[in-house]
Length: 87
Image (cartoon, rainbow, N blue to C red):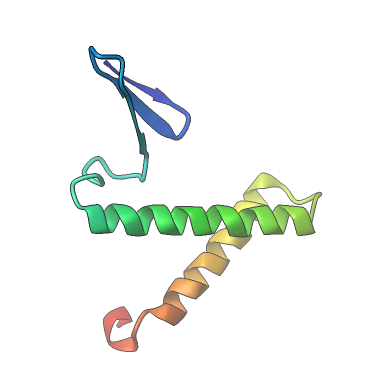
C-alpha cells in the first residue's frame, strides 16, 4: 500500500517496516542515486534559503518568498555551472 502524505511517500510492508522517500518531482527520480542526491541537496538548500528570507522579512508572502528563493538558488547554480555546459 502506498499513500501520499505531504512531501513523503510511505510504503508499508507486511512486516510493518516503513520506508520514506522524499518526493523530488520525477517518477523515476529514485532510479539514479546520484541524481536523487543532487535533487535532495538542492531542495534542502532551497528550504534553508527560504527560511532565512522569511526570518529576515516576516511580512513577505509565500509566493514572494518562493520566487526570491528560487531566483537565488538559480543564480548559485548558474555560477557553479561551467560556461561550456550552460550554452
